[in-house]
Length: 323
Ligand code: UDP
Image (tube, rainbow, N blue to C red; front, side, top):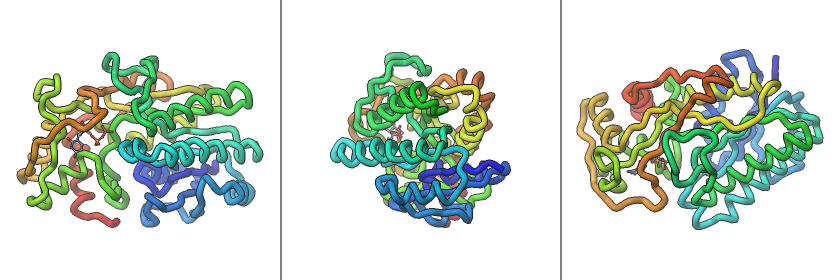
């Protein structure tokens, strides 16, 4: 049985990946500082409360377990906060990763799947976005992830690190069983906020801009189900012997903010109160991926291609929340 260290395994995508790996015969060790993660989301008995800034503690974890590979999610991920507190982002996301890599190499662990993001691309020059699209992130969060991607590439060449950086588009939905789901504090993402507005009719969802150059004037994104992301992490772990590099994870389908709201109204049978506001800084009109490389290299095919199916899992979590 392979042993995988999952940093940030108490977070949204991390916890779904742990579930996927455990269900497929892996032993998972979760490392999380629980600043944003949830204890209830940790589905493995092997849980270490630790922080990437604490190298001694990392060293102890690598001594305690015979780790084969690392799936590295632990990071701060609020774009707006990163603009106001870049130091926090560079320290945690970049120095934290350097600490992790140091300890990995010391213990001769040379396999990493890294949680990256389409935010490394910045303003799109063309769509759909492929992996060759220029990377010019427009905020410190995206830059911190791009810096780590580049560090991994250098460590691959110089220290034989095998890595795959997975660039997610918009993660959405939750486990079909509703045992784990999406829970951020503060919540900033569109889908949970739409569902909350449907539940609490007094708090309308703010639509950030309705004058974009899109068919209905609202922004278009590529919403990818979190269980499809989790499967891709397993496939990436199993591909590390043959391939190192960067891979997009999206459905290739663009959905507008208005389409999300209409679909949410249709699956819940309720009206979503809305309020049009001005554009949010740094939001491109359209972002969606081509996932050809993920299909070719990983053999990954997303199962959720209908936004209503994704929203249904998010809705059943929202009305049965465990945390
Ligand atoms: N959005 C919105 N109102 C909100 C949150 C998001 O209109 O309260 C829009 C946002 O402008 C973007 C899309 O919904 O076009 C997805 O935003 P989210 O923050 O979920 O993800 P992002 O694309 O920023 O990673």
